[in-house]
Image (cartoon, rainbow, N blue to C red):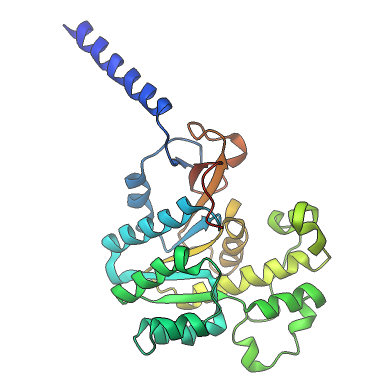
Length: 291
């Protein structure tokens, strides 16, 4: 009887595996060691974090859909102990964002006056509207693009003479910058369309973004709260970028990272992606792009 039951269980397990292989999964979730896990397991483990980074691929619909799912489910766990923030909003737009969230301006006014990314309405508006509905804070963490461009042209010296008002939207100077941190070091060898932009200040422009986002995250995070931050995966992959800057200021923070990667097949995580984040959303590389 036991042998018969075992045969039935093995047959069922084989059927499940075969069904998965014949199916068309939109993603597979892994832990950093490359073990397949279920979504609910990740939510249960990240709900007590101080800061959660969701590293997206900007044009990937699964990233944007999953950001909304993670946000909704963390809200169910933590309610008003949740704070949102994003790379996609520049710090000098915080007042405009606050006025919209608090009902002092309408959608048309907000979307005309804020410097929004071209894919805002499809990819980031659902997060802003969720924050507005639930009355939770949404922080514009990124440096204004004009100041990052200034660093790209002139190095950190280029922003030293900015007004005190301008510097309110940048991490305090001098910036803690280590060119040997791998994410900055690698930038000097980028190819493709980025090659035309590479100069000695190229990684410094990235660092001023990371440092500023870290600054505004830490400025708005409170003990007992969960701050979830949406950013391009390069800003938090390998526990570098923004994460590195945060750890320089507070090594005791409980930081959890999520990233998104593309693979031809999602059933097994490729070695190059292991340990890039605490949790890895693996998406088929032929997934439709949002732009």
